[in-house]
Length: 485
Ligand SMILES: Cc1cc2nc3c(=O)[nH]c(=O)nc-3n(C[C@H](O)[C@H](O)[C@H](O)COP(=O)(O)OP(=O)(O)OC[C@H]3O[C@@H](n4cnc5c(N)ncnc54)[C@H](O)[C@@H]3O)c2cc1C
Image 1 (tube, rainbow, N blue to C red):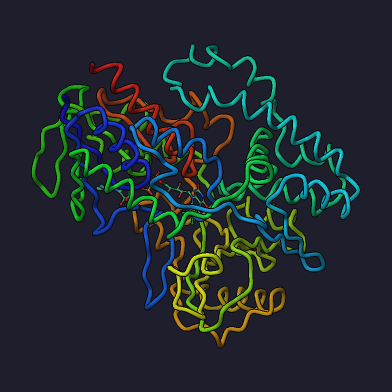
Image 2 (image 1 turned 90 degrees about the horizontal axis):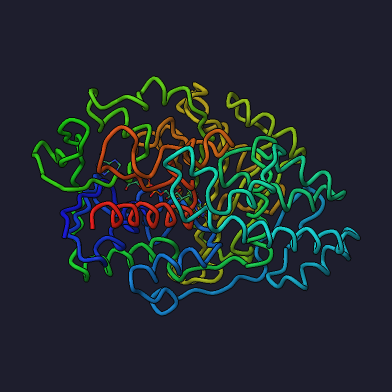
């Protein structure tokens, strides 16, 4: 049995905790906040509840695999429902609610755009790509030779240098249909023309495998994980900020927590990697990754958030993607990471339509997420925020008939606020997922500069997003088991 200290009780830290505690290790998670969850924590504002970040649940097999590897039954512990429609794509003249049943969706595509056959063929090919990717998602890329192992040859066939935008443009004609398979680059905080083409598997996951709603949202899932972790003997210490990783030579030997040294055989870090390099890694251990080198890497955009409690019951679906009038122009603006676009896209999460725990009866809980430049842009939110918020409300009113007078509670959250939580540059979706920042080129699960220090979370392999973060925890926990048992 090893003594393992985990920095952070975000989804990555909790997942690693579950896996390691289930193997009988003595595991303690130190979390700087008063609550667990990190970017996925529960927000309570007045009588309304929100999930601070994640809301889309796709790729259920990765959730199931995490629970199964910890000896737990995901379906028994986490009540959820499959959504139909999966979401509304809202453009100025053409709102489209995409069916949650794939055969019906193919028919919608045929009836609306006359491209049903091409769409079905595309999704059939995506199924093969998705299968080929599985092996790559569950193993480490710690050595250059890992790039030649396993399923890489098969996976490599599909990677290519094409972007999502180019890949989709070749296959489809109707602009809205194309948007339905490229807006997902938003989840990576990137634009379709910089996102590698194989990420079209995100639309495959939504359109074919479906989108789910977990009762109580993602915070409820994290509560279950924390409870099961504690039942296995794990300990979570909230309000315990970690000041430093202790090293002896190249080896991690513990943590300094609230000024006190704590010994550990193994350290797992869930904090954002560039912030970890800047604040937690002793300077003598900064070799491959230094603050200066981290500053040169590519980071995702940020998100301006509005958490709204409404006096009225909206009839909107759970998820709405309100797309810019000129989506391509908007994403070009976003890529420059400099200005706040007036023709913004936004994502609306309205869980109270299917889940009473989010708002009082007859009321609505609404999260508005607007992708915006990260803090490297130098945008002064103190000066810009009020005017930008007014533009967002105006757009919501024009497109969806939103009535501002129904707002009972309002909690905004800017890129600067995200940065204050420890997210480097407020880049909410982590290091960019470009080819040169993926696989072997992303900070390794077994951290290169410090032995017995492992990474979990969005800035290590395989990348950002809940199921992918769970995969990083599976990889790191298996590396620990392999080396230390
Ligand atoms: C607005 C938004 C919407 C999103 N939507 C989705 C979605 O719909 N679906 C999806 O799958 N994913 C989504 N994501 C992505 C996903 O939520 C995040 O990638 C995920 O929460 C990140 O998890 P993590 O474990 O990597 O890190 P975090 O959630 O950031 O957790 C890190 C934890 O470490 C703690 N910590 C940091 N430093 C220290 C320290 N020194 N001492 C102690 N504790 C420390 C932090 O307080 C935090 O609790 C979204 C993200 C955001 C921001």
